[in-house]
Length: 270
Image 1: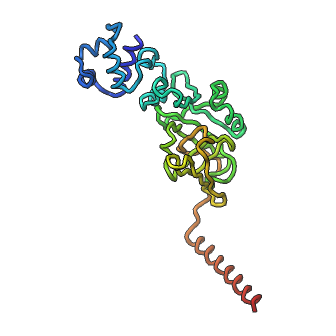
Image 2 (image 1 turned 90 degrees about the horizontal axis):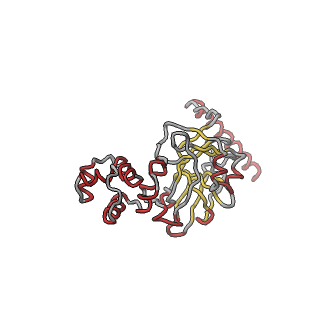
Image 3 (image 1 turned 30 degrees about the vertical axis):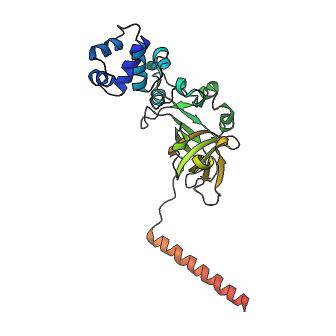
């Protein structure tokens, strides 16, 4: 029944009717229905190869793995071609947790847990101990995690803010000028604006929003995980927007102070 349930699930996730899928697979609707309802106990090798190619899922996965037990994120990864039987050791295995309804949790990594996360990020037992929650405004078929940042390098995002990131499987998808949370071998969790030089130099160039912090280059071998920044949560109120007259007053004051400095320099030179 695993195979029949799997091919039915994969079809319904594509929102396609039996008529459409049967035609695209080159079989009759009744034949497809017999595969989906389990009346065919031993599918032919030709049929298995056809379903595998059509859904881009390995035969082993179709006949051995109950896809109905996977979370939305895991199914989405599978449909994107990240099948462990196909990719083998190239697949990055993400330790994750789900709730009672098999929905992906958002695990929260606070400042105190950041040191442990550097070593325990791939350990299911460590990940299970992290606080978890759900956020209905996010997509169900993607994986999110929340990290607490410390320091002022990403101001105006305040120190101690919580940043939520979406898991990035393919690091070549990192977009220039976008913010990412990266787990690195040396510095642990860092939150930076990234520029992607992986294809030519196998490096990432990382920038802070705060110009007082200089950019630096990170070798891809130093990277363990990548999460695309989605939004952040902070208990601090942002600085109020200054009124136009107040801004003009500040500019005039700066000009006066600059003139005083210039006059002082002239006197000293004379």
